[in-house]
Image 1 (cartoon, rainbow, N blue to C red):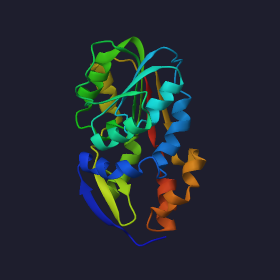
Image 2 (spheres, rainbow, N blue to C red):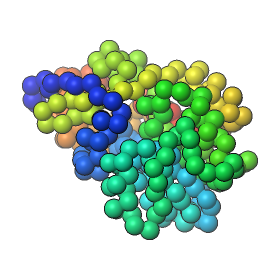
Image 3 (cartoon, rainbow, N blue to C red):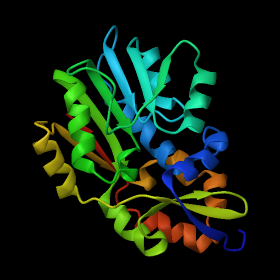
Length: 239
């Protein structure tokens, strides 16, 4: 266990520009916890039109492609997008904001938005825009940090999400929204909440046992405290 690292607050753009090169390499407890559960929720996608909103380096875009979907990934951060394009030459990626998705109304059968809304200021606008391009009867799946855990992390890092490096902790802007905020945004966008799934860090042995994740905390005691206090990590919205 190492000494406490220096903290630096950064914008979303700067944070992910720094994170991009190591994003697919480093162990991320959120991703290790999210993916096994989220994969079980994916519907039948063969020959379906799918959109990955905030696709990052393309981790979910490629999964949808392998499921047989005609998939497109959109991402506002150029550094993350560059890596996605380099990794998956046969998938269409383009730069775009969740607030202004460059497709016509009802273009997609399926939309996934994974670990994106945590950084979104205007929740109503973002969800309404995804609803606009989703076909009637289509499915939207969202994974995000639960407001329950954000209450705890706020005491440590405020309204930010930490990105750990060897020397620093970069605190990336991440507004806190309540569950009520999400529900209200869905209602305003004429979306029906079909399923809500909450999971804990303790539910993911891959995350709990990962040595790299443990070492990102200043001490063993701090890691155990975090592990015990993490009641809920994700909300899964299947709409």
